[in-house]
Image 1 (cartoon, one colour):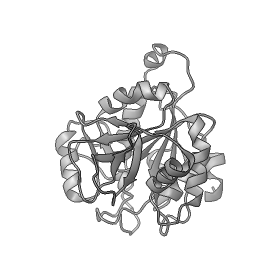
Image 2 (cartoon, helix red, strand yellow):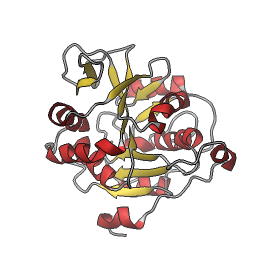
Image 3 (tube, helix red, strand yellow):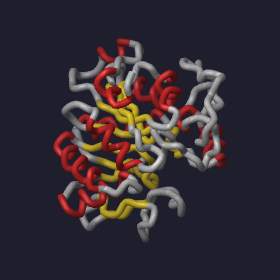
Image 4 (tube, one colour):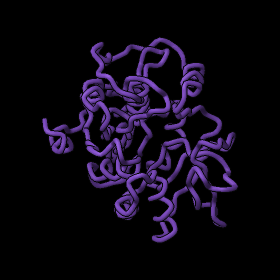
Length: 277
């Protein structure tokens, strides 16, 4: 398979979850999800793509995300993973996904990975997840009404504001205004779970295209807000757990919050190529 053809040749398939969840839901367009899994994640210092980092419950971060997404949003959810660093391992670990390849993963940031992910989706809004965020299923349950209403939003945690995290500010009407690691007067942290509506998606794509290679996707959101009037609603998920795993301490915290044996559906092969994460 040629990497350039991944989005055309690897259609997403359902996860084979219990059909009774789907029967209880109204017949609406399946939720589209993009997982950003292309980066090298050098700060964690592991020899695997960070989404494949094993958790104490026996699953990788990615598999836990997929299990949670399928559990809450239903088996028809349409998932695209943007891959780059050691992409073969991610594809082997989750073969039922659609894949979009970022060949420039080593020199571009999340703005370009999200751009490729959004381009691989069909009509409609898109929920996107950073590939290193471990979160409670209750987070997705809480945002389900906003997904059904097709609102653009950013999940935020107001309980802490870390120096290294993406922070946000609001305008006078309560919409997201500033969104970056360097924003001053941050009201909380963006946790890496966001949604763009069908109506806003083309504009966000345009602004991601204009981003520099080293820009985070939040830069594209900021310029779309400032220049095109896009509105992202802050959804406060502080009462539930969501941990973005950047460092070993984050991994320890995620394992402490989310423990319990689960099956590891797609074990990572033993012959892992050398590399940094």
